[in-house]
Amino acid sequence: MRVYIIVTSLAFSVIGDARGTVVDTGADAQRYCQLLTEGSFHDNGEARSAGSCEGMIETAMLFSPNLPADVRACPPAQGSVLESVKVLLRYLDNNPDRLNEPGITLAIEAFRNDWPCRGDDAEASERSGPRPKTRLPKKSK
Image 1 (spheres, rainbow, N blue to C red):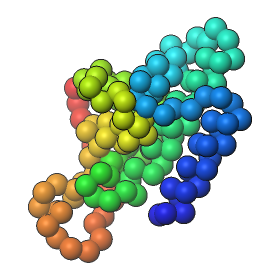
Image 2 (cartoon, one colour):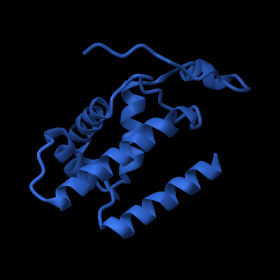
Image 3 (cartoon, helix red, strand yellow):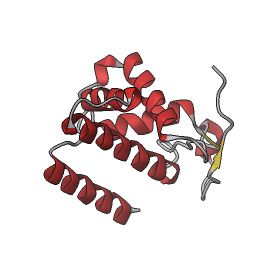
Image 4 (cartoon, one colour):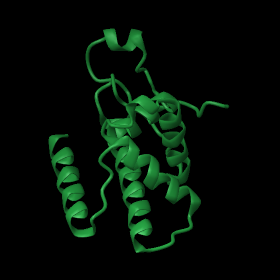
């Protein structure tokens, strides 16, 4: 687990240095992910920003089912990046006071809010031992 976090951190630092665009805060995520949902970029900088959002979202989707039960999320196995971006943007709109927090943290929290893992409720957290990582059906809105 630690290896994954270290590799991800290194990847983000390299991407940030090489491209000049990285999603540090919720405000960055909101701005860059909005560009991704619009899909219309005026210059290379906007395209890189949208790509940074996409990378952050894909990372959160990949790692969130493997996190500890109190923060774990289970995005749909066949879910799209665009669907996940919309979940994050809705979460950020509902929590504007948290825009200074790390973007990846907010993405994972947004996923947990919409896609909790089966067995991660209060009763399950009282049990000891490994918990199954199964996905819950998507909430209807």
